Length: 269
Image (tube, rainbow, N blue to C red; front, side, top):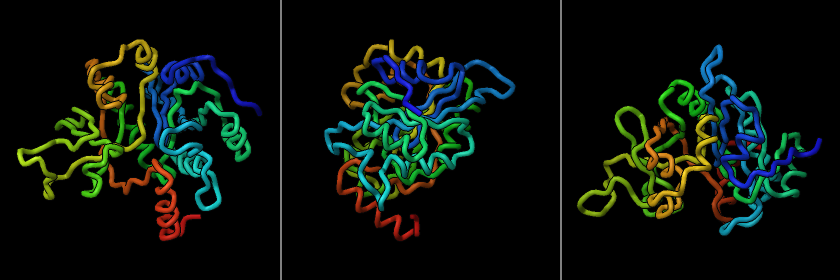
């Protein structure tokens, strides 16, 4: 089997062109998701999971192929996502032939995309979280996007690599930031307040993805370097589910040892 190629130059458009039209697409573990507004017997019932895997990275070159207890990180992520019950299909999207070859070797479906592809870097993502994000968008016809958050650890409060989120009383995202939000008058983290950490799993409606690439970059998106803000600044609704998850993303080489230690503690092979 050979990877499916695509000529699209943006993440949004390759998701639409490279997969089934009218599908609900969820990008697992550090990626993106899409859901169609076309009504079927069950609203937004066709779901495709996409794990993006880019070789180039300013902080961690070749991250998808780094071994984690003997298996490439991309394989660890794929194996976890395969356990989700809502995904009708799961594919890896990559810009690199080396990653594609490895993925085909362990049985994954692969599509080739542009260098704008991101990275699926949550090798311990719970399949229940994937299912929760899918169901949240299926249940919210007024939203075009869904994602997940968990409690922020105190030691991560000032880490710009840990994206924070604030949510309204209806479960819709208000804002995302690399800084600590909300911020009180003292300028210090409140130990009695539950701050929210954004997890790298997102779900999009397919019809929205056809629009998204044509939306111009927004001021807040560029300042924070967060694509979620492009969605919010253009007035679209984003559903957020709160989950109990000890986030273990791989952002820098030092994170690999932390992941391996945790896997040994949990007897995960």
